[in-house]
Length: 222
Length: 222
Image (cartoon, rainbow over all chains, first blue to last red; front, side):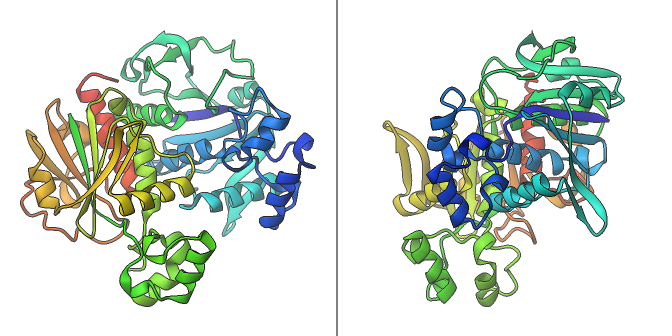
């Protein structure tokens, strides 16, 4: 089994500091949504984010990169074969567990609606089956709750190695940053195996793709 | 080099038969766009598509699956290393050539806007560099215009083989269907190497992922 943990993901509802912002309130009105129940999205709210979090406006509010990553993981051969578990740990220490039967909506707007429901109700089911759930947890507690043989962190400052050189047919947990800029917020010092797989910056879904595809190879699926 | 041809892609502007449809005209007005310049999108126009193309409403108007596939191919290690060329051939025999320096907009709405521009202007440049271009061409003529050692078609009725068993370190052209239902519209009988890689239906971006990731392995990148 491959456990993929997307850590410190920039996925949050509108922070308190921003809930009175006029542009944010107009957007909420347009969407007919309570301000505090909207997901922060820099695709539409960049100027407001910059106003309240000037040093983080390039980083915060990126549900789009989580969306693209989950479109990849959930539709992979590895997930079809029930050998992949994907978890999203957010910057606010909320952990989203995603059932392997879960498929993301094809439209980004419906994805946002689904995850706004999740933030509100903490669980999404369909015909009695759990699709998504959310709980409060640190990255460390999440990792320790998962039975695994090896724990690997992908980091630009890790040892430069090809995925085929470190991905083996074992019960592996791989941590990927869920952000497009900067470094981890959570403590990751307890993870000893640290690798970089490319000398240029990659998107998080490209990194996730490489992990999934090379694990598929390691277990003989492709 | 890996040449990835997405064939018979369900990517088109609003067909003539639909341009007088009230719902389509309302949508165009809302977007402040000429009806004939909008891209058909079943995420928003499914009812109208069903009205004019009842047997094809599950197939036509799928820019979303092309968007997801291109987000993936353009951000891959193989593309970063300039060893990937991606082409989109549409159901209407229009061919879109995508420069390896091209990255897709993060927001789906901007992707739609970009490709509506392309359908209108036939070429998209940035600082004098060509990013996207469009020309009229059949699938056969496109394939014959590309220098290659091998031509491969992925098809559910092809020989069941693992990607690692047929992807080699050669100049390979791989044809993937750019649709979510049904079969190819274009003639593909001239392609002898035909493979299926999984016993269940996969999304086109999962198939493209497998091709890209396994070619990366074949050329020693990962």
